[in-house]
Picture 1 (cartoon, chains in turn purple, red, orange, blue):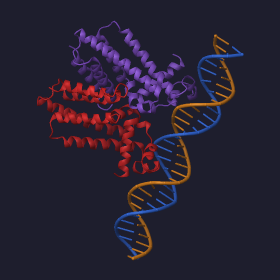
Picture 2 (tube, each protein chain N blue to C red):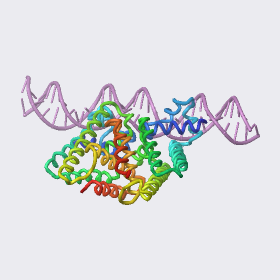
Picture 3 (cartoon, chains in turn yellow, brown, green, red):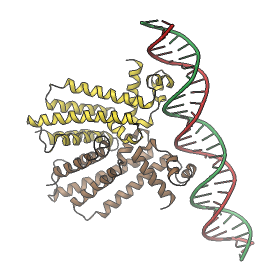
Picture 4 (tube, rainbow over the protein chains, first blue to last red):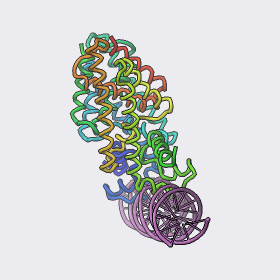
Length: 183
Length: 183
DNA sequence: ATTTGCCTATCTACTAATAGGTATGTATCT
DNA sequence: AGATACATACCTATTAGTAGATAGGCAAAT
């Protein structure tokens, strides 16, 4: 892994651990052996770094989507849950949730990229929910986009909320979604 | 309203608009005619101000709970939704969501107070859901605390997420919760 | 009735730390 | 020679927080 990738991954960690406005170039320079000024060589501004982090997430998500193109809706759902399970295990929050609370402080290109990311996520979940319903694996009423919004909301929020309640609440919510959804 | 109360309300606005780490004493001093140093007279540290903001929310929530002690579970649910409706209309996010993403940067007394707040919210919702189920107004499976977690998660997240998708998604999610819950 | 002194709430002026960012130099590799 | 990937040194703005002065109100003492 080269320096640029390392910077992106560290920034990603900090954003989802502490929030965009709470992490600094110094935090990164402190973890890898590089001076803060050198980070600007790879990413002129903090916003550029923010965009790169989101792009990294888009790539990862697109890879998940592609690798699961041929699997069943149930497998896709499990894969979806595993993304959030990993976030919870690391005691982080999801990127969308983290940046959404800071949204009004972000500059336009970060906002735009974040919207792109959430759109990809929402489309993917909507599609495999719809597919699962057609195949009689899932059961829900109303539009699949709405159900996707509901499930994503649950996941996005529970990784945040369970920082305050109990870590176990993640599993509680996950199982509740499965029980309601799966026929 | 005295200066101290004004400071709390402004801090509350900023926290839920931009996040705890993105607002400064200057932001407040800029809105009311007071110097930043004078804010420290009322709140020695930023954390003290944070605690006061959460306490303000606890008071408000306790008032809502008390004023609705004798109303029906359905009215309580509507009242619960109206809290988030207001948040959405102001394009803010809820306090718990905002501070949960910054959680690892907060100091202990703020964390503790925030946990208190989320506990009160969760208990209240759990109780009126349970009551509504007993009275055959609501229909859901599993523990009422779990259902409360699900509904609070939906609300907490959709005020964040709909900053990225469309504002209307708040109503979509709200109606979906109602359709699933109400017999 | 006036003075004295304390309390409250503010200001001015300051500090030390941290922030994001820039300009320039330099070593290495192609 | 030029591009790449750093470092050094620096800048400016902003941050939370402190110290000390001040001004008004109130209440007890003179």
